[in-house]
Length: 427
Image (cartoon, rainbow, N blue to C red):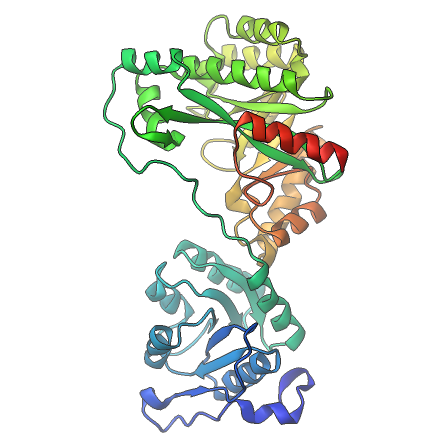
């Protein structure tokens, strides 16, 4: 009997698979008529009844199904059927689901649904492995498969928004001297792009993160990955920070209202530069701002043992009214000890914790714990790397305060960011 009371008239849509036939014959295609809005879905499960039931459910939901119990036939179908979605069982004889995901690799563009009769921790391990191999995971389908769960998973596919890469030059930046790089900074070739941050309570843009782009005269617009290593090698991070700080303060001074904030990235070594506090104070005064409008987002900490001088420098910045943010918390060398010793106001949840959030209860538990930890320390939380509606909904339900990512907006030039901010104020 088909699970979830699928009408008996749908049963013939998936043919029975005979295990006595050759592997090449162990594939059957649903007889349902193709629907333009449906997906092409390939099912792999070593149990014939389960495979056929899933095929019938897929067809009942208006999609085109192809089911198989054999690994060889599965990979052949990937090449010929060109599925939009693959449903893969966890435990199978010969090659299990992990083997299948690894062999598919990142070249397969089909979205993945993991199905299993094991507990949720095993399923989540499969999901994380799928992410590791470059797959786009829709979620998990516990056995016995329920039609409502399958429908919810398949409905995620058309709503998912892809994150196209930022247009930029593909040219390689040649090695440059400190003098050449300093000259580019002085000529104003480095520009702050502003990525909006959405308040999950008011649903309005509440601030921005300043992200640098180099408008190179010959190579076009370059992302930080292309030039930051050279700036760091020549000890020019503090010079870049001053450039970004000046542009960020100017941007804030032109925005209506007095609540929006801009986060400017700074390495710990930059914050420890002699006269750093004075630079901050003079800059905000020149643009007529209060220190509470600026977030100093610490991007790296070096070794685990922070010198007392660094802790005191950060504490004095916070006492002066500047907002301190710990970036990418839970990765690298960031630790709970940092939260104890430094008066941070913002905890940024790294995008790696959001990957698979919609289908991983472990990831949801971690984010819920981080939100609770931040609240207990009088901090607000920002989740970065939000790229789809489902993730946005989940982080809101888990108590996050602010969302940042391509779903809200990409980094943009100051004039476009200002227009977006003014628009959200009038909604």
